[in-house]
Image (cartoon, rainbow, N blue to C red; front, top):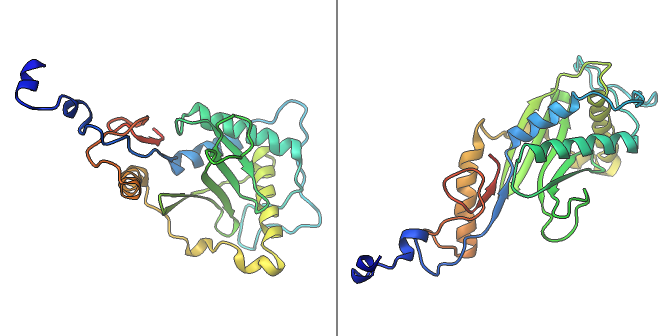
Length: 245
Protein backbone atom coordinates (compact mmCIF):
# COMPACT_ATOMS: atom_id res chain seq x y z
CA UNK A 1 0.00 0.00 0.00
CA UNK A 2 2.80 2.43 0.96
CA UNK A 3 4.59 1.57 -2.26
CA UNK A 4 1.53 2.46 -4.32
CA UNK A 5 1.19 5.78 -2.52
CA UNK A 6 4.86 6.49 -3.00
CA UNK A 7 4.38 6.00 -6.73
CA UNK A 8 1.58 8.55 -6.68
CA UNK A 9 -1.16 6.10 -7.62
CA UNK A 10 -4.47 6.81 -5.84
CA UNK A 11 -5.47 3.55 -4.20
CA UNK A 12 -9.15 4.19 -4.84
CA UNK A 13 -8.52 3.78 -8.57
CA UNK A 14 -7.85 0.13 -7.98
CA UNK A 15 -11.16 -0.29 -6.22
CA UNK A 16 -13.69 1.90 -8.00
CA UNK A 17 -12.00 2.96 -11.23
CA UNK A 18 -12.55 6.59 -10.30
CA UNK A 19 -12.37 8.54 -7.03
CA UNK A 20 -15.21 10.89 -6.23
CA UNK A 21 -17.05 10.21 -9.49
CA UNK A 22 -20.21 9.45 -7.60
CA UNK A 23 -22.36 6.39 -7.99
CA UNK A 24 -23.92 5.75 -11.38
CA UNK A 25 -27.73 5.93 -11.70
CA UNK A 26 -29.74 2.85 -10.87
CA UNK A 27 -31.68 1.31 -13.74
CA UNK A 28 -34.24 -1.47 -13.33
CA UNK A 29 -35.07 -3.78 -16.22
CA UNK A 30 -36.89 -7.11 -16.34
CA UNK A 31 -36.23 -9.83 -18.91
CA UNK A 32 -39.45 -10.05 -20.95
CA UNK A 33 -38.80 -13.64 -22.05
CA UNK A 34 -38.68 -14.72 -18.40
CA UNK A 35 -41.76 -12.64 -17.61
CA UNK A 36 -43.76 -14.34 -20.38
CA UNK A 37 -42.58 -17.81 -19.34
CA UNK A 38 -43.66 -17.20 -15.75
CA UNK A 39 -46.97 -15.76 -16.93
CA UNK A 40 -47.69 -18.90 -18.95
CA UNK A 41 -46.64 -21.17 -16.08
CA UNK A 42 -49.02 -19.30 -13.78
CA UNK A 43 -51.86 -19.64 -16.29
CA UNK A 44 -51.38 -23.40 -16.12
CA UNK A 45 -51.61 -23.62 -12.34
CA UNK A 46 -54.52 -25.49 -10.80
CA UNK A 47 -57.52 -23.65 -9.44
CA UNK A 48 -57.79 -23.08 -5.68
CA UNK A 49 -60.03 -25.51 -3.81
CA UNK A 50 -63.71 -24.73 -4.21
CA UNK A 51 -63.24 -22.24 -7.04
CA UNK A 52 -65.86 -22.18 -9.78
CA UNK A 53 -64.92 -22.38 -13.44
CA UNK A 54 -65.36 -19.04 -15.16
CA UNK A 55 -67.93 -19.21 -17.95
CA UNK A 56 -68.04 -17.35 -21.22
CA UNK A 57 -70.30 -14.35 -21.38
CA UNK A 58 -73.22 -15.40 -23.66
CA UNK A 59 -73.47 -11.85 -24.98
CA UNK A 60 -69.87 -11.85 -26.17
CA UNK A 61 -68.48 -13.25 -29.39
CA UNK A 62 -65.60 -15.72 -29.67
CA UNK A 63 -62.20 -14.67 -30.92
CA UNK A 64 -61.89 -13.55 -34.57
CA UNK A 65 -62.43 -16.06 -37.37
CA UNK A 66 -59.34 -18.16 -37.93
CA UNK A 67 -58.56 -18.53 -34.25
CA UNK A 68 -58.83 -22.28 -33.78
CA UNK A 69 -58.84 -21.97 -30.02
CA UNK A 70 -62.24 -20.24 -30.08
CA UNK A 71 -61.26 -18.26 -27.01
CA UNK A 72 -64.23 -16.33 -25.65
CA UNK A 73 -64.57 -13.21 -23.58
CA UNK A 74 -65.54 -13.76 -19.95
CA UNK A 75 -66.95 -11.45 -17.32
CA UNK A 76 -64.49 -10.22 -14.74
CA UNK A 77 -64.62 -11.98 -11.39
CA UNK A 78 -62.66 -9.86 -8.86
CA UNK A 79 -61.74 -12.79 -6.60
CA UNK A 80 -60.45 -14.95 -9.44
CA UNK A 81 -58.50 -12.06 -10.94
CA UNK A 82 -56.97 -11.20 -7.57
CA UNK A 83 -56.00 -14.84 -7.00
CA UNK A 84 -54.22 -15.04 -10.35
CA UNK A 85 -52.41 -11.72 -9.90
CA UNK A 86 -51.26 -12.76 -6.42
CA UNK A 87 -49.84 -16.00 -7.81
CA UNK A 88 -48.20 -14.26 -10.77
CA UNK A 89 -46.51 -11.69 -8.51
CA UNK A 90 -45.36 -14.45 -6.14
CA UNK A 91 -43.84 -16.43 -9.01
CA UNK A 92 -42.07 -13.37 -10.41
CA UNK A 93 -40.59 -12.55 -7.03
CA UNK A 94 -39.54 -16.15 -6.39
CA UNK A 95 -37.69 -16.06 -9.71
CA UNK A 96 -35.93 -12.83 -8.64
CA UNK A 97 -36.59 -11.10 -11.96
CA UNK A 98 -35.24 -7.87 -10.42
CA UNK A 99 -33.84 -6.96 -7.02
CA UNK A 100 -36.90 -5.00 -5.87
CA UNK A 101 -40.28 -6.55 -5.04
CA UNK A 102 -42.69 -6.78 -7.99
CA UNK A 103 -46.42 -6.13 -7.96
CA UNK A 104 -48.90 -6.69 -10.80
CA UNK A 105 -52.29 -5.25 -11.64
CA UNK A 106 -54.87 -5.61 -14.39
CA UNK A 107 -55.70 -2.45 -16.33
CA UNK A 108 -58.99 -1.39 -17.88
CA UNK A 109 -57.33 -1.98 -21.28
CA UNK A 110 -57.03 -5.68 -20.52
CA UNK A 111 -53.26 -5.44 -20.09
CA UNK A 112 -51.36 -6.87 -17.12
CA UNK A 113 -48.92 -4.34 -15.73
CA UNK A 114 -45.89 -5.19 -13.62
CA UNK A 115 -44.36 -2.53 -11.38
CA UNK A 116 -41.83 -2.02 -8.61
CA UNK A 117 -43.79 -2.68 -5.41
CA UNK A 118 -41.63 -1.17 -2.68
CA UNK A 119 -44.18 -1.64 0.11
CA UNK A 120 -45.32 -5.04 -1.17
CA UNK A 121 -49.02 -4.14 -1.08
CA UNK A 122 -49.81 -4.89 -4.77
CA UNK A 123 -50.82 -1.25 -5.27
CA UNK A 124 -48.83 1.04 -7.52
CA UNK A 125 -48.15 4.46 -6.03
CA UNK A 126 -45.30 6.86 -5.37
CA UNK A 127 -42.38 7.94 -7.50
CA UNK A 128 -40.34 4.83 -6.65
CA UNK A 129 -43.02 2.35 -7.73
CA UNK A 130 -42.35 2.59 -11.44
CA UNK A 131 -43.75 0.53 -14.30
CA UNK A 132 -41.66 -2.49 -15.32
CA UNK A 133 -43.59 -4.15 -18.14
CA UNK A 134 -46.99 -4.67 -19.73
CA UNK A 135 -48.49 -7.86 -21.15
CA UNK A 136 -51.26 -7.67 -23.77
CA UNK A 137 -53.17 -10.30 -25.69
CA UNK A 138 -53.09 -10.45 -29.50
CA UNK A 139 -56.02 -12.76 -30.29
CA UNK A 140 -55.58 -12.51 -34.05
CA UNK A 141 -52.19 -14.18 -33.78
CA UNK A 142 -52.82 -16.32 -30.69
CA UNK A 143 -50.02 -14.75 -28.72
CA UNK A 144 -49.12 -12.61 -25.74
CA UNK A 145 -47.02 -9.48 -26.27
CA UNK A 146 -44.86 -8.10 -23.46
CA UNK A 147 -43.43 -4.60 -23.67
CA UNK A 148 -41.17 -2.36 -21.61
CA UNK A 149 -39.52 1.05 -21.99
CA UNK A 150 -36.19 1.72 -20.29
CA UNK A 151 -34.11 4.87 -20.69
CA UNK A 152 -36.08 5.92 -23.77
CA UNK A 153 -35.86 2.60 -25.60
CA UNK A 154 -38.87 0.29 -26.01
CA UNK A 155 -38.64 -3.48 -26.32
CA UNK A 156 -41.27 -6.08 -27.26
CA UNK A 157 -41.27 -9.86 -26.97
CA UNK A 158 -44.06 -12.28 -27.86
CA UNK A 159 -45.03 -15.82 -26.92
CA UNK A 160 -47.81 -17.98 -28.40
CA UNK A 161 -50.55 -19.12 -26.07
CA UNK A 162 -52.05 -22.56 -26.62
CA UNK A 163 -55.52 -22.24 -25.19
CA UNK A 164 -57.54 -25.39 -24.64
CA UNK A 165 -61.11 -25.29 -23.31
CA UNK A 166 -61.54 -26.59 -19.80
CA UNK A 167 -58.57 -24.87 -18.18
CA UNK A 168 -59.14 -22.64 -15.17
CA UNK A 169 -56.78 -19.65 -15.14
CA UNK A 170 -55.90 -20.13 -18.81
CA UNK A 171 -59.44 -19.71 -20.14
CA UNK A 172 -60.47 -17.19 -17.52
CA UNK A 173 -57.52 -14.80 -17.70
CA UNK A 174 -57.12 -14.87 -21.48
CA UNK A 175 -60.87 -14.39 -21.90
CA UNK A 176 -60.86 -11.60 -19.34
CA UNK A 177 -57.95 -9.81 -21.04
CA UNK A 178 -59.67 -10.20 -24.38
CA UNK A 179 -62.99 -8.88 -23.08
CA UNK A 180 -61.49 -5.84 -21.42
CA UNK A 181 -59.37 -5.06 -24.46
CA UNK A 182 -62.28 -5.21 -26.92
CA UNK A 183 -64.48 -3.19 -24.58
CA UNK A 184 -61.91 -0.47 -23.98
CA UNK A 185 -60.82 -0.08 -27.60
CA UNK A 186 -64.33 0.38 -29.00
CA UNK A 187 -66.26 3.37 -30.23
CA UNK A 188 -64.23 6.58 -30.05
CA UNK A 189 -61.16 4.66 -28.83
CA UNK A 190 -61.16 2.02 -31.57
CA UNK A 191 -58.36 3.80 -33.41
CA UNK A 192 -56.14 3.64 -30.33
CA UNK A 193 -55.96 -0.13 -30.21
CA UNK A 194 -52.35 -1.35 -30.47
CA UNK A 195 -51.39 -2.49 -33.96
CA UNK A 196 -49.82 -5.77 -32.94
CA UNK A 197 -49.17 -6.87 -36.51
CA UNK A 198 -46.94 -3.85 -37.07
CA UNK A 199 -45.15 -4.15 -33.73
CA UNK A 200 -41.52 -5.06 -34.23
CA UNK A 201 -40.34 -7.71 -31.80
CA UNK A 202 -36.94 -7.53 -30.18
CA UNK A 203 -34.70 -10.50 -31.02
CA UNK A 204 -34.44 -13.50 -28.74
CA UNK A 205 -31.80 -12.89 -26.11
CA UNK A 206 -32.23 -9.12 -26.44
CA UNK A 207 -31.88 -8.55 -22.70
CA UNK A 208 -28.08 -8.53 -22.46
CA UNK A 209 -27.63 -5.87 -25.14
CA UNK A 210 -30.57 -3.89 -23.75
CA UNK A 211 -28.84 -3.82 -20.36
CA UNK A 212 -25.69 -2.36 -21.92
CA UNK A 213 -27.69 0.23 -23.86
CA UNK A 214 -29.59 1.28 -20.74
CA UNK A 215 -26.39 1.69 -18.75
CA UNK A 216 -24.89 3.91 -21.43
CA UNK A 217 -28.04 6.02 -21.72
CA UNK A 218 -28.27 6.41 -17.94
CA UNK A 219 -24.68 7.63 -17.75
CA UNK A 220 -25.25 10.15 -20.53
CA UNK A 221 -28.47 11.40 -18.95
CA UNK A 222 -26.99 11.94 -15.50
CA UNK A 223 -23.37 12.61 -16.37
CA UNK A 224 -22.28 9.46 -14.53
CA UNK A 225 -18.66 8.37 -14.50
CA UNK A 226 -17.82 6.17 -17.46
CA UNK A 227 -15.25 4.25 -15.48
CA UNK A 228 -17.18 3.88 -12.24
CA UNK A 229 -18.74 0.63 -11.25
CA UNK A 230 -22.45 0.05 -10.86
CA UNK A 231 -24.18 -0.86 -7.64
CA UNK A 232 -26.78 -3.52 -6.96
CA UNK A 233 -26.69 -5.87 -9.95
CA UNK A 234 -27.81 -9.50 -9.75
CA UNK A 235 -26.43 -10.31 -13.17
CA UNK A 236 -22.72 -10.40 -12.37
CA UNK A 237 -19.84 -8.21 -13.49
CA UNK A 238 -20.85 -4.57 -13.27
CA UNK A 239 -22.80 -3.77 -10.10
CA UNK A 240 -25.06 -0.83 -10.84
CA UNK A 241 -27.70 -2.20 -13.17
CA UNK A 242 -30.71 -3.49 -11.27
CA UNK A 243 -31.85 -6.13 -13.71
CA UNK A 244 -32.85 -9.76 -13.80
CA UNK A 245 -30.69 -12.81 -13.83
